[in-house]
Length: 409
Image: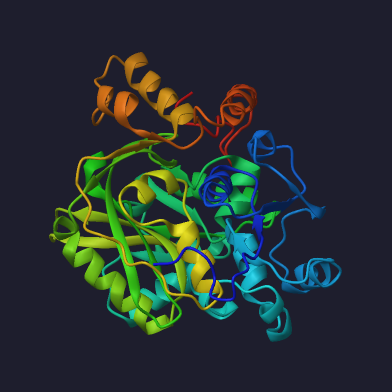
């Protein structure tokens, strides 16, 4: 298959995002000779890449489609492919008017579809309607709504923000565990003070390997061009953080999960890249969906090495070109986010525990998200920033608890 558009021109790309996923997109497309420009007004790791080029004007991240439309309208570039790499940027891009979509093609569904995934409350309603197994979920817009939950349920409850990015900005985690009704009330009030609301999501017990992650791509015809399944090895911060080390497994090991995912994608008319988290519940033998991220995820290099080059698929699909279908992949390929995986391993050792999952294999043979020999500066810059933020986080309390937001501390 040709690697150039049919009209013989290679459109440039505008990348929206400052961190790991955006860096992965930049590296993959630059390797194919595509000119890429980063829109974000940032000093994050992406600016240290040897291939970094700022757009003619930069701007702060926003979920507002009107703000993004005003920005794009003023650019001098005639046409460019848009690739958003965060929830907010994806929301903004998916709501652009049709005339701008022609000038700035992208591989995204309409904004309403994106909102069903980004808004955790709407996502729970969607999965209920499609009868997709999920953890029990209760909306908690006000402290008074805790009356829907028993004291037993609140003894070890997970409060999940409906806007994960805003919560992470203020509190540094994906959610908060509480152990009493009073503690839950404090968390809800602290969140409300910064515009964060919560849902109660039942916590499914199980080891690290109970969580599987599915990455894939759907083209403009609604065809799933490929899926890759990975099993979680470690997470940081503990319990409420992101996957920092994983290993590929055969599709058949998670067939019930991928079958349910295909129903969600078909029902919503989804298009583009996705990353989905499932957890296996030993109580009933079901894979239960936790969340669906409608954008490229961190592990772009690992997924590409398994045969699914998501940035390239986005680039071609946005222009109406054929998308290569993923080839069968091999199990046992590791991927890791090296900074946080080191922290996760250190946490186990401090508690005199053996780390979950393999350690030597991922560090010797795994695909790294930040460090590349051909592009080493983002790793050095990222190490400095990560250590600085981690020291600051030790002193920042979780919402309403007076304790550190990072359980590893």
